[in-house]
Length: 614
Image (cartoon, rainbow, N blue to C red):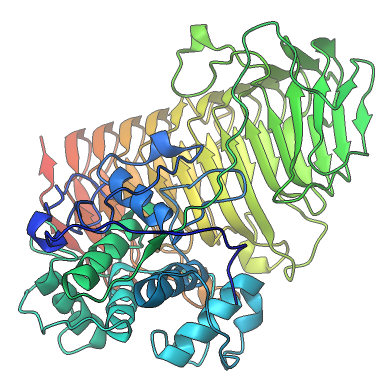
C-alpha cells in the first residue's frame, strides 16, 4: 500500500562523515523543548534536503526545527491537511505507527510504500484510521509493535518516551542496524524490562540521552517535534552502519493564504450580507465573506467541509461587529464539520500576544447570551482572531449534549482570541459530567494564545477530553468574579480530561490558578501563576476511569515542571494523584507561598527535585 501518490524521488546526498560524530547534546530547558534526545546534526542524512515549510513552522521549538524539516523532507511526516505540523501535540499510537512504518520503509528501500500485511488481530483495530490500520498491520507483522497486555492496540493512547524508544529500536534492528547493549544508568528506569534495554541501547548509540538530573522520564508523553529527534537520530545510526537507503520525498504542503492589506477584498466565493442571520448551505472549500459593519446573530447550520477543503467564514475588508442582544449566541454552530471562522480578513492583532488596549480582532461578538457555541455533531472546527466580550453566559463553548457517548467529538481549536467581561466561563468545552456518561468525549482540543480577562466563573474549563488536549500560551486574569466557590479557578482541567497545560500566565484567581481534577497523565509546565487565593497549582485525585471503560489507559502520572508560582493564600503546589506511578514535581520556582510550598496528599508518591522556594 502507498501512503500517498508517488512523485519522483531524489536520493539523499550523504557525505562520508558519520552523523554520530556530529551529535550535539540538547540542553534540557523545559518540558517541551527538551526531548531528552541528542540534537541530531543534518550533515549526513539531511544533506541537500528540500525545504518543507508548515503553516506553523514558527511555532516549532528552535531545538527541533532542523530535525522536523529533515523528517518532513523524507515524507516521514506529512503534516495536517490545513498545512500545520502542530509541534506540541502528543503522538498517539496510531500516529506513531505511521511515522515508524515510513521510517522503516525509507531505511530499507527509500520509499514510503508499505507492503500489504495480514490483518492484525487487535479487537480495537477498527478505531484507527484506514491509513493507520495498514501501518499497524505492517509493523505487527514485522514485530515492531506487539499491542498491549490485554490484547488491544489502543490507537488513541499517547506514546511515552520509553515506548517510543522501543518502537524506534525495533524498527532499526528490522532495517539492519546493530544496537549494542547500553550501560546508561538512568535513575528512574525499571530494571530488566524491554523498554529499559531499548532506552539504554539507543543512549549507547547516541540517539537519545537523559535529563540533567540523571532521569530519563520514561512515562512522559512524546510530542510531534520531539519525535523528530528519535527519527533523525535513528536514521543517523542506520547511515553510519550503511543501513539507510532513504530518498527525499517531501509532502506537498498547502499553506493558508496570507492576510491581505487593510481594506482589500479577499477572493470570496460568496458574501454574507449584514441582514442575513443564517447560513445553511456551502460547498466544501468555499470562502464565505461576512460583510463588514454591525449585524445581529449568525447561525451556521449543516455546513460540511472536508479535511482537504474546509469551509472558511471570514470578515471581508473591515471589522464585523456582531451585537446579538437577546440571542442564545452571537455565533451558533450546529451539525457542521471542517469549518474555520477567522477574523483575519484585514490585518488583525488579537489574543495573548497583544495588550488589551491594542486588540484589533476582525470579528467581534457582544451582548448575546453565549459568545460562540458549537453543538449537534459539530467538530473539526477552528476559531481564530475573534473577540468575545460583554456576554451574559459563557464566552466560547463546544460540547454536544444531543449525542450519546458512542460519538466522539474531534478536533476543535481556539487560537488568538480576546475573551473579556464574560458572565460565566470564558471557555467551557466538553461536559463536566464525565462520570455520569452523559455526553460525548472530545479527541483533540487546542486553546492557544488567548487573552481571557474578567470572567464570572473559571477562565478556561475543559472536561471529558481524554485525548490530545492542550491549553498553551494563554493569558488568564481576574477570574471567578461572581463569587461562586466552585467556579473560581483560572484554568480547570475537569473530570474526564487529560490536558497538557503549558506556558500560560494566570493571575488573580480567587481559588487555584491551575486546578486539575481530571484523568491526569499530563504535563503542567512552564506556567506563571500569580496571586492565587488558595493553591497555585492544585492536582486533585481524579481516577474517574475506574468507572469508565472508554479510557482504560487512565489514570497516569502527572508531571509538574518548571513553573513559576508567586503569592498564594495556601500551598504552592498540591499533588493528589495517588494512582500515578511516576509523578514528578521538578524545577519549579516558588515565592511568597502562604502554606507549604509543595504538598503531597495522602498516598501520593512523586519525585520532587530541583525546586526552589523563597
